Image (cartoon, rainbow, N blue to C red; front, side):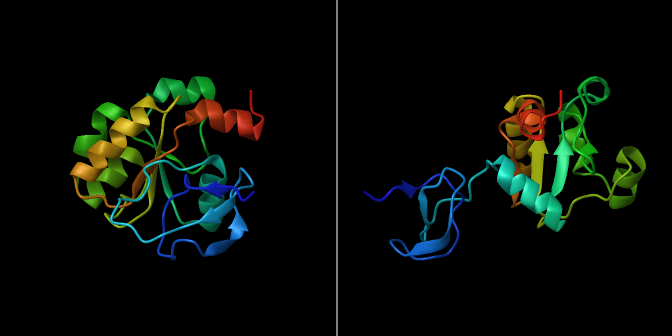
Amino acid sequence: MLEVCWDCPPTFVEYFYPVQSLCPGSALHFRGYSSEPLSTEVSYEQLKQRLNDGKVVVIDVREPWELREYGFIPGSVNVPLGQVNTAFQLSPEDFREKFGAEMPHRTDNIVFLCLAGIRSKAAVDTAASLGYKDAQHYPDGWQGWAKCEELK
């Protein structure tokens, strides 16, 4: 029996034609044309690959004390959830001055992260409302990242 993975983010490949890779769950991966929006969730494997490729901006929406207490993904930018709306409306210069990093473009792949995936989902909704078209979140949050990276 053939296993099919419908959980991965869709791209433009015909239905019923297998993509030449396997999903992390080892199910054969099928994709299809769809008017559905891209998935707002990203897996550990997807995030890790995008980080390695330099094709993602990771925004950590936890409070600064949480990053000091628990840790953070190297290269991530800390923009607490309560500041996401105003931060993403700043000028690039003001964003850089306030958050110490380049402001993401509306076309950049942005992945939001928090401790357990609740606040990051809210940040995706905020970014989408401001015109950021490729905003996603890592639903396992820092806890999931630390577990996968074997950080305690």
